[in-house]
Length: 202
Image (cartoon, rainbow, N blue to C red):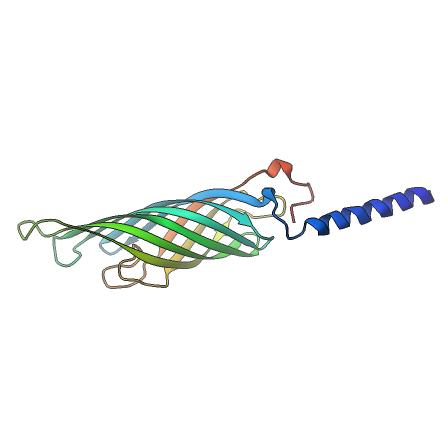
């Protein structure tokens, strides 16, 4: 009996040392991928987009990821009645998500957008104009998930964000310079989950 207790104590100690030894090191089971669909509808305008991403869970509260986004923007009566604006943009980005509880998160996301913009004036007033430029965006907001728990990082989510930088050329700012609400819905997929312990990955 004493030998059994001693063996159990040694096994617990070794397990704890092993866990502490791997703490802070890269763990492939903390990798995740995913993507979301973006939509915004405001007076005279529409924004539609898609953004895949790849990231890493730092701990049970924080996820970070690199992303790449594509957006289509359409506005009518941009400068005057009857004119239109059509815009396509794409570019890299990065975000951090913080989970105070497993089903809620706050998010901050940086994007650099390369933009092709086509201005279509009121018929009969002049030719179409095409310009190319780039602009930065800083999206901040929060959302709800179906549950981010220990031992798994696969869930659906919904969020609402705003561009707090409000750069005039941003795809998330209207003609009057106001940040429009950006609705995102997507899926987060944990990778290598079959490798994880039943006790969780943290």
